[in-house]
Amino acid sequence: EVSITKFPADERKIIAKAHDKYKKARAGIINTRHGQIHTPAFMPVGTKGTVKAMLPESVQTTGADIILGNTYHLMLQPGAKRVFKLGGLHKFMNWSKPLLTDSGGFQVMSLSKLRKITEEGVIFNSHIDGSKFMLSPESSTEIQYLLGSTITMAFDECTPYPSTYEQAKSSMELTSRWAKRSRKAFYSRDGYGQFGIIQGSIYNDLRLKSALDLIELDFEGYAIGGLAVGEGQELMFKVLDYAPDLLPINKPRYLMGVGKPADIIGAVQRGIDMFDCVIPTRSGRNGQAFTKYGVVNIRNSKYKEDNTPLEEDCLCPACKNYTKAYLHYLVKVKEILGAMLMTWHNLMYFQKLMLRIREYIAQGKDFDFIS
Ligand SMILES: O=c1nc[nH]c2cc3[nH]c(NCCN4CCCCC4)nc3cc12
Ligand SMILES: [Zn+2]
Image (spheres, rainbow, N blue to C red):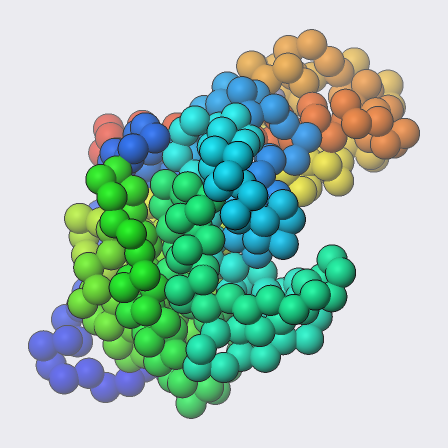
């Protein structure tokens, strides 16, 4: 359960504000140097400078305005300096729209062997060849500059779940010190932005302190970190019942790593504008298709002679030109085309979901049942 800490009266109204469904949902446009982002937005994940199994022009046809790249992977291979020398990540991967890069801390903790967290930053051994690297607020910010990111993420520490109050407090305070250094290292230019990431785990007073520390640094947007790390949807929503309200209402709010359609809908209702998640791409490659009928596990033998499309009214190539039987076969025999078609369909499904959410918000309609 979320521990409720007594607030001085004037701050309590922020936390206790009645959770009025839909009232917090908002649709908008973020203007950047590389084009507009219609929010609520879903960012396909392109970890190593490619959205796996997709051409960038195909990603564009799904309606994605922005994709995510990972600093950790790109700094190890091919290296940020090399990407910079080759003209930056946009040119390298032939994606001219906005790019957001995660700052690397989260990936270091989940991927690298042997690492050491110090006040300076994180020292780690590459999971590729074991060579030694350091990521700090300064080096992460510089790497994202060399990549040419449209939106740079501050270097933070993602507080694990569960954490005690003390653990969450010291982790949040480290993130606040690192945010200050990240902000100082950021080379601000028109049309580019840097987002701070708030921590504080499930403790509302720590979330408030994190927000206050980061608002002082006047970031162009704010992410809510430390969620989708095993706490479960109910607890995530409990934090989201108040955390977005702690952030400036006129700036983008990004919920990192989320999520399934139902998670996205619930988070939009609580005031979130931006999302990223590997689910549509990773589960597509594993044979799971998101459809209006629910998730279809195409490897199931019941589809081996099913001559109908995943969704009869979907405009993606998988649905327009192929059958479930063919997709079943391709995925079973691990043909590359299977990964391509399943990924394309899922990205289309997620973008259609975001489009419908934006339309419902614009019309002031409730959008509970969409998914
Ligand atoms: O606190 C964070 N700071 C920087 N980056 C993050 C990335 C995150 N990604 C997630 N969750 C990803 C969950 N995802 C679900 C599908 C399978 C793979 C993992 N939480 C995050 C928190 C953070
Ligand atoms: Zn489709």
